[in-house]
Figure 1: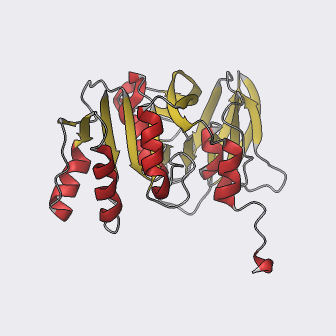
Figure 2: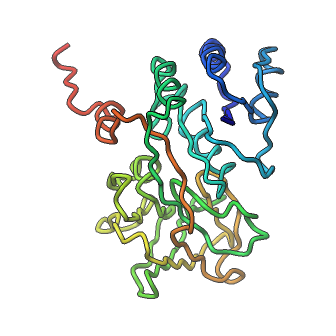
Length: 295
């Protein structure tokens, strides 16, 4: 099997975990390929050169049987961006903090790798969003696993976002921004602005305003097959569009046609252990049921 390893460059205190990970990985009969940027970071930062069959560049047309993402959820999102339409399932190994996507903890790495390389796992196919816009702006990475965010930039003034669902006018949001999130992204940025948590298997999207200038505006859950159209007005004549944190500055509505967002025509496969469920992850990560008064 060809196995790719993608990692974060924000792991200066995680060298021991990274070494243990590659030591465990070497016990399995795998062809190991490492993301070029991650390998360069390990060599330059630590002088550490893990064994590998070759290096991967995100722009290359590579093939893998599976990908291992070593870091937090941000690393998982970067891995998903590199995988794109290649139909390669991803296992997230958490060396970061919360970890909803990278939900395999460091103490579980050994047993998880054994299960995965023994075929004892399942793959959840996760919905992505696609921003339909001139390809010269975002290239081929016009998709997002978590959310597409429309945000104000370089000013304290709010932006105005005229929003339509399947051609039907929904609302004009005056806010710091607007998020369109997948079920996967419902536990990310959207949750931090009081959006609802949606289970990954639900066929929905959620529209969540960021600091809206109206007390009665609330997040809205819509079907995943909806087409969302946005017309943005700003005082600064530009705004920010972010796809899973990959951001680009856009001109205001006078120079730009409306933005359209829809469900992408491909999915990202997320590897899950057979005895792990989303509800277990919620309890563990959000500390549901923990009563600190008993301590």
